[in-house]
Structures are given as structure tokens and as C-alpha cells.
Amino acid sequence: MPKVEITIPEHLEMQIAQLVEEGEFLNREEAIEDLLSTGLKAYKTSGPIDEDEAEPGLEDDGMMGHDDEYVF
Image (cartoon, rainbow, N blue to C red; front, side, top):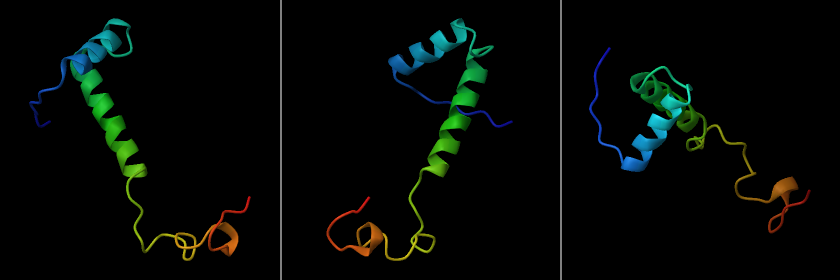
């Protein structure tokens, strides 16, 4: 497995240490690996929408085809 060296702010280090102390993770390495993996998955699923995949018409017009307001 590749090794990566990073520098993080003190407050993040303290939060990671607290999670390990509380038993959420076995050790610091596992915590960082799991949190990084979770963050990448969240970023991938909430990233920008590809314009080719967006539903046509909804981005320019309001809901239900109204030009200047949304109808619920």
C-alpha cells in the first residue's frame, strides 16, 4: 500500500486522536484511512453534475416549467 505524508491543522489531529481514544478506530492510521475513504466517497457522490446527465429544462426554468418561480 502506498504511503502518504501530510500536514494537517492541530484541531484535526486532536479530533482524530479523540476518535481513537473513544474507540471509534483501533489506531490513528486506521482512522485517517477510513476518514479519507469516506470523504472521497462523499465528494464523489456530491460533486458537480455533468451537464449531459442533468434533466433538460429544469436547470433553466423553475419547477413545473414556470420561468420565474418554483411551484410545490
